[in-house]
Image (cartoon, rainbow, N blue to C red):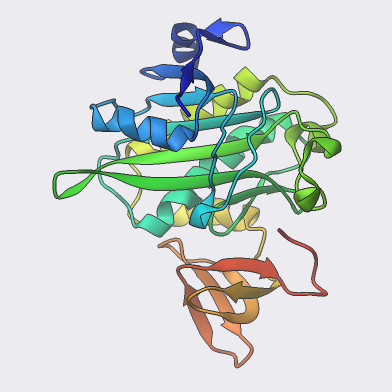
Length: 272
């Protein structure tokens, strides 16, 4: 399917949004297959750090490990950003840094609730997922030249707007806050926060960043099950400075998890 450009989003032209959000450029689309793919093409043509692709609808939106991401029109924020960090941090650290920046930006719209991060790339409110992050490298020559940061945020969804298979595990800013936040305001706050966070990202999480992450860690202290290359179960003990998940397994051994899918163990709670 061919991308369909748009002149405006929520009544505002791209140039106005870029100025409001302090971004170098915003590219608007009525529909795309994937905002990450469109942003990658812009990165390949030299688009600067902070260039944003925003679509009203994705027809083939994807999450981590190629999972489908429902992106209907009129409800959420489906964006991808071209990031050109001064130095590339560890791959596992990127979605954590993006998630922390986005969570802080979203807090203003869901008070007194606080957005949480579920390792490695989910955003949650009250134990339910409202956002996902997908970071992909864009190569130039023999090395990485940019990072494409994709984000899907459920904003105006009512419970019945979600597909039946995720209705019990998904939420939106509207559901959590009890009112309807402005999509342009949320998108601008999140995009600006992420652009700043990735301009000069740290090589590791330390000090205030690690403390802030600990306050938003949705898994810490919970019994979890990990599937994938390192299947195991145990108690999540937080996130390491490099962005890995720390789990003490059933034998009492501290394990460092760098990939996989994590869910709360049965009896602890239900977590998507």
